[in-house]
Image 1 (cartoon, rainbow, N blue to C red):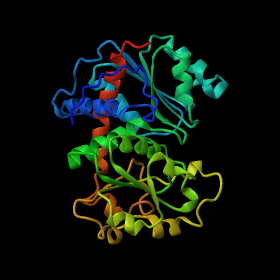
Image 2 (image 1 turned 90 degrees about the vertical axis):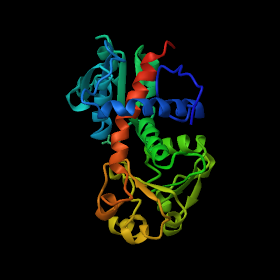
Image 3 (image 1 turned 120 degrees about the vertical axis):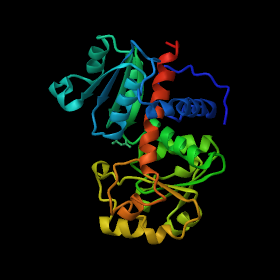
Image 4 (image 1 turned 180 degrees about the horizontal axis):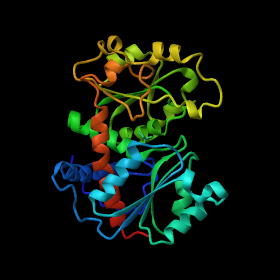
Length: 312
Ligand code: CP
């Protein structure tokens, strides 16, 4: 995969608006950054003098830590702000909080927020770059980019791969970003989960819908199991968690029906015993920790590309 695309975007808000060539450019750039994390001195001077702030209004382990590591490995200065200790708790608006942080000469703000579209509001109101680290149920672009990077690394291609996304599709920003990205890169995507957690009309995004997990496992090259997002479920979408685990949870018995080379992915955090059995999560077909490792390289690429652009 080689691309002649150039990067002109100041922000990364989602994969819906990115072209195939732009996605390929991020993946190629990430490939060149991956070896930095295996050096004794894990640093390159690419973003020396830049300041990157992470502003998280929802919990995170992987995304926040890997953005911070990515920025540090590019020699940027970093600052992490969590909502519970910010002045939004005293009634300040999101944009006011962000403008005040930006007033201290910040170059990029990495934002996670429970409201879909919150990073767009910041991108319109701020002068610095804004990177979406997950907004409501809408998009989680860097998660999908690291998932695609991992698929590319494991299979040497994405074009033609059969990828199944399994679980709580309705509430999943990871599913949406992966659908945008994977279909643009030529993968055949199937979504599978309980009917109550399947968005109406999702076929219009270019995916197939299945409710038969065994059939999906038999016919896939890769399965992306999703976290069941209990915090976003206002109504009762499932009779019981036990029933979900029985019907859609992936265990070693179900997985044994899959093709040779089938891999299992999960964005984390994993509810062990619910979406994946412990045996599968820790098993040979699981690439969950590879995804986490690749997250640093992908976020280095995104920061590097976004902060290098001159677009205003
Ligand atoms: N995948 C993901 O977004 O994980 P975190 O919530 O830990 O950042």
